[in-house]
Amino acid sequence: RVNIKRISTGVRSLDELLNGGVETSAVTEVAGEFGAGKTQFCHQLAVMVQLPEDKGGLSAKAIYIDTENTFRPERIAQIARARGLDPDQALKNIYYARAYSSDHQMILAEQARRIIKQDNVKLLVVDSIVAHFRAEFPGRENLAERQQKLNKHIADLLKIADAYDVAVVVTNQVMAQPDVFFGNPLKPAGGNVLAHGATYRIWLRKSKENIRIAKIFDSPYHPEREATFKITEEGLTD
Ligand code: ADP
Ligand code: MG
Image 1 (cartoon, rainbow, N blue to C red):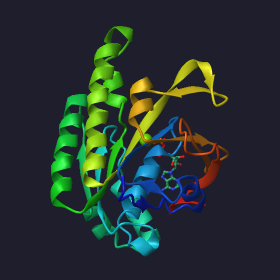
Image 2 (cartoon, rainbow, N blue to C red):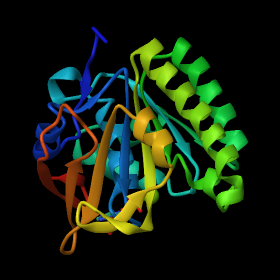
Image 3 (cartoon, rainbow, N blue to C red):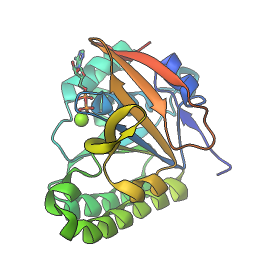
Image 4 (cartoon, protein in one colour):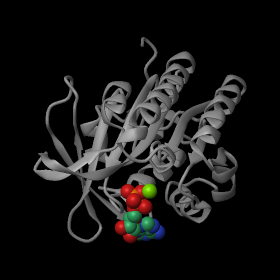
């Protein structure tokens, strides 16, 4: 990890929380409830990575693996315009694939690796990483198989991040748990596999209206700080 670069989130408070932005050669997990802004965060980064370095980007392309059918080209166009990029070009710089099952998702990760070998890609998004796994392997009786598959998938993603100096960003839905987690009775899905697989974990939660709060969790290196941001027409903003 000598060559680490950062992709600015485009939000000062979030960049401060992340010591400058989302890191390459690392897997960053974005967890939160429905509507917390996980998908918006991914859209924003898919644009930000394209900016030149003096504007916080890496002059590079993105790959977007969409498991929930929530990718919106028009949203990319809006964010791109707000950042001074040509919307059509910004969309062309995103390799997009919809994953229809957990197996398909794992195949797409392998295809992503091949694209990354050949093209200037510095961001790989998987939104969301666990949805298919949870749907296909429900309940305790399937837990072992689910975790084993998820473990393999995350290991593949970590290898890609490491081998090609790419920032991997995965989203994770939260589910109700009886115990209290950060004063919030919710916990990220995926359990220990993600806890050990992700290099950084960001927790997003809703505040009033379009205001959101981000926090780093499970990190021995980051202080327990919080960052506040907004979701607007322009994307994520301070
Ligand atoms: P999650 O992926 O965590 O479920 P999303 O990233 O989809 O959540 O965030 C949804 C939020 O983003 C909603 O509150 C919605 O109002 C806001 N949002 C989406 N598009 C826009 C937009 N064009 N302008 C302003 N807010 C938007
Ligand atoms: Mg989403």
